[in-house]
Length: 234
Image (cartoon, rainbow, N blue to C red; front, side):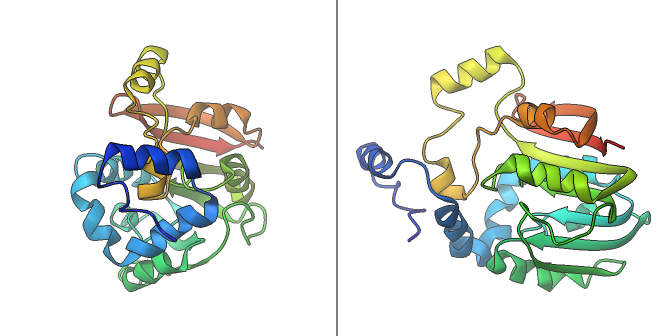
């Protein structure tokens, strides 16, 4: 069952719900996406304007060669993938409802492209299959982000690139502490409403990933959005 809208009535109802259920399981978070897949693009358009949409264009326009997107969702990255340097595109996601929306757009891309069902924890591709691996709001949405990151590194070719646009806890300790104290990040009901966590330690995941060498990390929006460029360790 999806509880996406049950928080609207009162703070007391929200408190009781969270005391009873805690944070959602992976299956419950996936159900959130099932619930709003048809209206997802329209729903996030204003939210992403000047934010995630711009961050994707800023970073992902650097994609080239054979490209894999992990957690393609409804295809929100497609508008940033019109570079003449891209030869082919494959997008995967674990949620069929979101993929149905992406399939409506994929034929408009100016190169061979397809999307399909796959789990980010175990990608169905051979080692060193892609020149560029991208993800946007993937690490915050999967159950085991460290495994997803390791898989991205595994399927990226030597000399290739892994490009990540991810929300998470703020980079600077003072901002992170202040946001936690004010209840801004994490927001207790965020995962129930949107399906992804807002308190992922992006830098910690990068530090722990032995298969990637980080080339650059930039932050946006009070340090809660990360634009990461990395390369597979050869």
